[in-house]
Image (tube, rainbow, N blue to C red; front, side, top):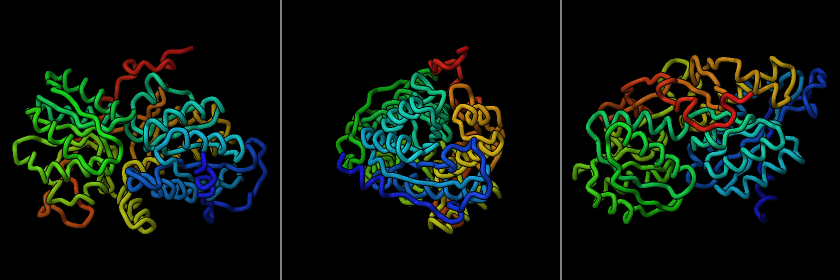
Length: 407
């Protein structure tokens, strides 16, 4: 645990967020509302979560005026380095010593699964935006956890359903070898076979590997119509780039990234990614509200927000508004208020939080634009379909969450 001191030293407290309290209210514990953003600052998910997720939480705190219930809002952050033991140690110290009330973001599902248990034991609030495994609201669900932005079921469901419907019946998976990738392959495989398709096999790769050649050659040799990338972030980008170099698409195989974002597509470039069909929970250019938020974010971060960063803003705002409405930061009270309150903001309209902790909302199917179709640097998607929340997410009774129906 030699990295822990360095990790915990990385925190931020930004004016006007750290204002002196203007009124006393005993129901706010420790006279401060402290938010901890646990994220990937240095590896494969740093661009799509990382400092951008911290900035999103800061923006929400600032939009609340820097305080709630007369108490200041403080935002701290740490890098979990994609290691469950480091993430767990950070959260234990945050809650036990630093009096953090809410833990947010936590990309890398193996870290999120460990953190979910700690937050539950200590009766705090866990708002997941970067984490993906659908187990977080399934068999590992928690009364203290809310899964906000996406999960492996919704991503697989929206993307795979569209590809199978268009004729992509046989699949082979290139999968990140940890909890998230395994869940993504599992959920996508079930959907493909349920729709009458076939899964011809899969190959596992280490997280953050630079060389996909052997994995892609196995996928090519399978003869599958579709190569499903059950990975994300830099891994998905590298796999697509190398598949393009090896001529897999030119040979007639379709590459389907099951989790990739607009920032990744921007980095890849439209000449490589053009025509790719993918699912996203949110996009910066959907409407006037998303564009206004994204302009504010870009002014600070110099890039457009990812869905996970936008989701972190939305989740943090809902949390702070629940504290304001109830007059307390008690976890059970705040979560009950959040679950009773529809989500209507720049992230979604008509969102709702189910008893398993899943926030359901409309989803989007996009196709990457060609260079000639794009009108600006970040104009990368054209909208193919909007999928209603009830059709995008796993049915409540299919996730094996022990909270569902419990008295």
